[in-house]
Length: 420
Image 1 (tube, helix red, strand yellow):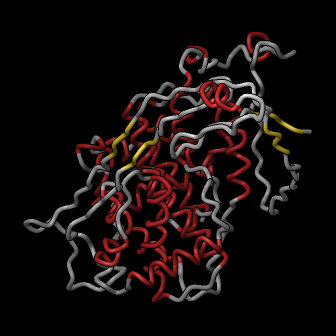
Image 2 (spheres, helix red, strand yellow):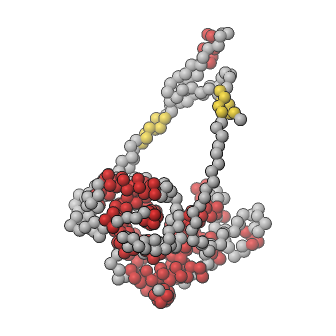
Image 3 (cartoon, one colour):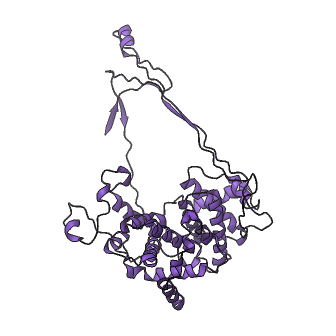
């Protein structure tokens, strides 16, 4: 099969078509095609982070970021761009068309790795043209996308399919329970590293997604590679560099990560580790994050900002905890919101939330107990980065809320302690 297209002018300048033997002058006058250059000139995206607030007297991995010294603050430079446009004139001619052969396409089969089964019911298709229409089969479930039909950014027609695919991805990039068993690196070392990275992330003013992706990269990499404890911090900062490139518009530079490690590693060390991480994870960083599922669940539950923020605090407590790495992001997000609703105003996990999250309240009870135990544990823990972060007014001082000492939460925490 062949496709045809008319001969186009060279974008670098004017192009004159070859003259015919019958009437050279007439064809040159009528068949000359010109096309003005039309390009977008993108300026360099620069981002300079000035000297960070690191106490150099402390060793790497356990250092804490203190208040910024005078003249030593983090800054991000916006990218500069310019766009030069020119009028484009397109003329059609009657010259013989150029024949372009279409290369055959090859289909490849994707084989997903085996992982532990997840008992989560698939969401029902609630479109009106299905036999079990939403109006008849799901009378107690609200169509939360009904008012989004006119907003193309919310892709209401595809959102359920998108989240179904995200659940496939989270199972594909599964993290095994106790994957550090028998390794030089322990769960306690991992916890210290991530607590420190939470402080670095906060000082760099990076996106929330960047922190979750950083932890995901660390766990997936440590699961497949043997790493010595003196290289653990290198893995951590490199994972944050990769996550920043994936999520951020203005990612920190390699030199910034060299500085925050107090020059424990060089730029070459970070670049070498970056290449190793990319190869080991096969350039695949599309694992869904807790935040993605929480936003969908919060919309389904029509929760307020207080409940959403408390759920974020609960989720962020889990990234430090090594004993929770085996749970899927969708499970953590659903359990965090369910506990948040229960603690703040005793809201019920209704049918709409069960439908869109694919988890019932009974399914989430064991994880809720673990989350409640983490809240109680955080008050006396030496790893205080997450709790300190959420004690600020920016996050409604949610980590110091009186509701976190409510009987409902303490009862769940006691159940978790008894089961362990």
